[in-house]
Every structure is written in C-alpha cells, then in structure tokens.
Amino acid sequence: MYIRKVEKKEGKYKRTIYRLVKSYRTENGPRQETILNIKDLDLPQEKWKTLADTIEAKLNGQLVLFLDREIDFLATHYVSLIQEKRLTARRSMEVIVDPEEAEYESINIKSVKNSKVRTIGAEYVSLSMYKYLKLDELFTTFGFNERQRNLAVLSIVGRLVSPGSERATREWAMNHSGLDKLLNTDFQGLSNNALYRIADDIYDHKEAIENHLQSIERELFNLNETLVLYDLTNTYLEGRSLNNPKAQFGHSKEKRKDCRLITLGLIIDEDGFPKRSQVMAGNQNESKSLLGMIAQLENKSISELENTKNIRKGKTVVIDAGIATSENLAALNEYGYDYLAVAKGKPINKEQIDQESLIKVRETKQNKVEVQLFKNESENILFCRSFLKSKKELGMLDNYRRKFEEEMKAAKSALTKKRGTKKYEKVIERIGRIKERNSAVARYYTINVIPEPDSPNAQDITWEFNDYDEMNFNYSGSYCLRTSRHDLDEKELWKTYTTLTMVEAAFKCLKSELAFRPVFHRREYRADSHLFIGVLAYHLLNSIRIRLNEKDIHLSWNKLRKILNTHTSLTTSMKTKAGQVILIQQASQAEYIHNEIYKTLGLSNKPLSRVITKY
Image (cartoon, rainbow, N blue to C red; front, side, top):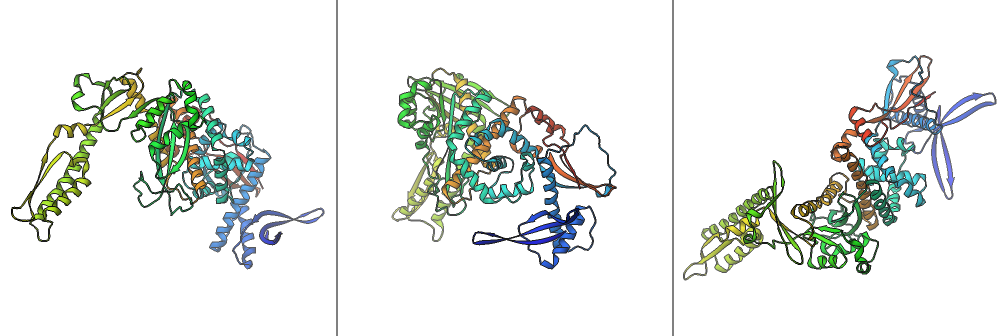
C-alpha cells in the first residue's frame, strides 16, 4: 500500500485529497485499487510510507513494534474506517449469514479484538416510535431525500437519546451511537451545518407536522382530547442574542437574571401529548398568549372562534392563575370552552370553611388533600387544602418571619450604636424598606416607632403580630379553583385540575431530559427550530411512556435510557489459521430487561442483522 496525493480542480478552486492505494497484478497487467479517500493528512510526506505499511499490517492482524505515536493513532483510525467501509458494502449487497447455518473456522484466539462499540438500545426504541408515528413517511411527502430523512431522524432521536446542542449531537452520532447502523447509513464526516439546515427544514413545516402528530396520535392511542392544558415556560440564551428580537430580559425560571430569555407556550392534552407549541418573547405576558394559542389549536384566527363555539361542547381549558384573568375566562366562555383555573388569591375566607363539610379526595402516607365545593350561579369555587403544601408553606413562613425579625432587630439596635440610623424620619424610611422586602409576612405585624421627647431621633421600635388566624389561613396549604363546569363534583374537579401537572411534567422533561436549555443560537429562526426539535423529541418520549405504562412499566426516561444504553453494537475482528481476517458486526446479546422492554413495545430483540466479511 502507498499514499497518493491528488489535486482536484473545482471551478476556480483547487482541492487536495489523499488516497490510500493498493497495487495488485492481473492478467492484463498491474492495477491499483483505492482503499480509502483521506480528506486531510497533516503528516510529513516522508512518513506516508510508514503509515501505509502500518495500516496494511493492522488490517492483516499483524503486530507492529516501535511505532511513532502519531502514526499509530492515524493508522488505527484509518483501519476502523476501512473495516466500516467493507462492512457497509456487505450490508448494501445484503450478504447476511444465516444464523442457523453453522460455519467453522480455525482462528487465533489472541487475535480476537472488539472495536466500534456503540449504543443502540435507546436509539432502537426511539427509532421504532419515530416510525410508529409515521414521521418518516411525512418527511417523504415534504420532498426530503434519503439523506435529509436520515438527518431528521438524527436530529429528533439524537435530542431524545443524547440531549444537547447540534454540535453535541454531531459528536454523539460520529463517536458514540450506532444509530447509523440502524439506518444503514454513515454519519462520519457529518458537519454542524448539516444539522442546522435540517432543523430549519423541519421547522419550515411546523404546522403540518403538528397537524399530522395530532391526527396520528389521536388514532393510535385512542385519545379523548376533552381537556386543553396550557402553560408557559422560558429558557435562557447564551450570549447577547442581538439578532433575535424574541430574546428579552424577563423573569427567568432558572434564576438567570443575567441572560436574555425566550418563552415556549405549550398546549397539551390530558394524556400528555403536545398539540401546539409556540416560541414567544422572553418577556411575554402569560395572560395575553392564551387566545392566540387556542386559535392555533384549531387552525383558525381569533375572530373565527366565536362563529364555531358550538363545536367545543365538553372541552375544558385548564390553566394556572397567571393566565386566568377575567378577560381570558370571559373569552373562553364566549368561544364555547369551559374552564378550570387556579384562582388568584383566595376568594373563600376562613369563616366560610366548614370543617365537617370537607371531603377527602386523596390520602397517602405522605399527604392528605381535602376539598369543599361552593356553588354559584356563574361559576363554582373549589376550596382545596393539602397537608404537604401546608408543611411547605409553614416552613416558608418560619423563614420569612426569621428574616423579617432579624432586620427589625438590626434597625432597633442601630438606635443605640454610633453612626447608626437614629433620626425619626430615616428610621421610618428604613422600616418601610424592610416591610417592602418582606411583604409576604410584614402585613401580619403591627410596627411602632416611638419618637424621643424633645429630639428629632427615634427612641425605640416595637413590633407584634396582629392577626394570627389570617396568617395561619393564608399559609395553611390551601388554594382555590374556579370553574364554569357545574356538572362535576368535588372529586372530579380536583382530579381534572391535577392533570395540569402533565404540562409541568412536560416542561420539566424538556429542561432536564431533553436539553431544552440553554440555547446557544444567536438567530431567531435557529433558536425557534432548536426548541421545536425538543418538542418533537418529547412526542416520542410520551408515546414510549404511554406504551410502557399500558403494560405497567413505570420508568422515567432517564432511567430507561440508562438501561437501554447497555445494549450495544460492536465489530469483532479475528485472524484465521489460513491468514484471513474475519470481521463480524452485530449487536450484543439482549439482556432480560432489554427483552422485557422490546417485548412490551412489540420489537424484536435483535436490532441488527449479523454481517460477516472476510479478506
């Protein structure tokens, strides 16, 4: 073998490639065969021969001594590419050895080596759900060619199996995953731009994709779709993001006040399937986004909603307090939707609560929830009290009180200290700032600043509780729900409200399990497409969860992914007694837990066919 340098002219530009060439004799004279094309070779020309000889020796299973470290590294890398090329050629010709047919060889046991160990379990499950939702067929209708469809799979499945940026997905696809084997393609040489472009192409068809998923999931999972769960979350962007008009400073869920934000609005049904998503500005007002999202859900303009309100009978919108403004609730009624919302504040006071009328709707070792229903002509109010929430709120109250009283003691002690705040007007200002910082608890105190006779200074500061009962009621773990549904009893209303946790669970999953944050893109459409790929990955995740839950397998995706990642593909090489080298590419033996998951999802426990090649 030897390395040949080739200059290629492409228009005005010249490109240099290197070819690893093998010479052999035929009846018609000597011939050369290109074994491998090498894009870049940063190695002095005097070492090319040594590199070629080392590659040939390694391919033949021979031991090479006293190797230069750089040549050893390059030779090992190129040998793996050549072996992969040969195995891929065998796959394309479908030369598969029948596993039932015995075949014997005498081999040198010491020559057996395993390489190209790649994860395939989580990829196999995710790809099967991708096909189950007929996304590949959908992208074909968009005119995506085979390469684009494979990149679409990589973008979505990659976000689910190995969450990260497009750059991280590329590195995972090339060096850690066997997804290319499952797709019978090759992701070596993949560029970051290829993943950026395919994300943009996918986002261009956002509306059609969401319509398709809404339809296919309704059919496959027999969805009721009687509830519309809506909420917002935000994520921060790295960098200044000056080219993204949506990147704005706002209230960060992750406490990243130093970063600009973008907001994702998500409509989800009671089974956790996203129906519509929209990327909005980071300072988006929650209450102003609801009607636009409802219109998107129905592929209508807001003005068209009123004319079709009769078709929405039996559909209930479930929202939290930030979105449940009087204007939004009135509009939902006008457009034919019922609503169930968390009330702002407590429309029910402590005198209205009848302890004997409270109904227990949930009781576990850790928690107990009691409710009381108040019926009105316009809407019903459900008072709820949670034992766990009460413990949490009482803990918060203790912290608030301790902090407030420490600041009050500091203000009091300053009256007797040198250079302390003593003037009456200044003390009043200081107390005002303390009350502002501790507004959650300061309103339950009566504070007196006593002036010093015949002096502009304050003499003393005193404080005491003025309403224990009101404070204990407000921190009792209680909250109220308001609803236009008059046909549901206490238990049905509370159970319906708890479905709102599906949206919270989706956001938690997007942030913790699907690398929703942070966003590294500077341009608006790139940031939007990054979030949309995460939403599509969540469709696969929720489909897997539903299928497994039907068979009583309840595992978080993180746990499931760790289990499945122990199922791998690998390439085994060995040298025969006759001097041949045998390459075997196959999946590792599926273990018991793998088999249970595959069986539940209706999958074979052999994701890959065994491919054998000899040379």
